[in-house]
Image (cartoon, rainbow, N blue to C red; front, side, top):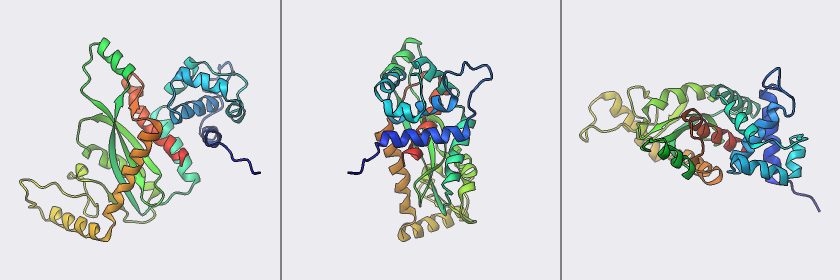
Length: 278
């Protein structure tokens, strides 16, 4: 009987393989060498994948010998060590990991879909916000660029809501352009991304002012989107909504961190975990 490999083992192998390709062996020349940086980074990605806290991840590693064997762990890292490993995950490192993974898979797309989704704080985070006197009125938004053909997240960024999505249009376009199969390539998004930066070929429905479109370029874009609806191309926007749904169902719809800089990283880490999950 053929033995089927656990999905946790497969994810641990991919996370560790990616971490070893991108990160140096140790984060500092005076590191005590108890653990390598790729080992700890893989543990953080597994923690996000399993929706565990730092303490729960420590207990989970104690109970899973096979994952420890995959990660070459001789000892179990403390929960404080895992927290410090998460703090080292800068935006630059996350971007490098995205690109390394997608370049290895040779991802090329003809159409790319943009969308944003909001994440709420956990009860623990809300408790600490209340104790510090901060009134919770905003939430963290994750903005994702998803390939229509492969449904991989090509790039991700984060911000604060409630706010318009127009500010994410150019960053997502610029960072995902490296995966475009041809020129020109197609950007698909909802009307929340409509702005003066939208191009003539973008499938972004223009917002009507007083139910009227006056500028010729906006009228032309409206007609282009209408034709794309009939062709079914604009309907491909559902794929990015599916990605948002998978991230929230599989990896949690909340952010656990209390510090703003760490809260902004979590949607980007969840996007990387999603790519490894695929």
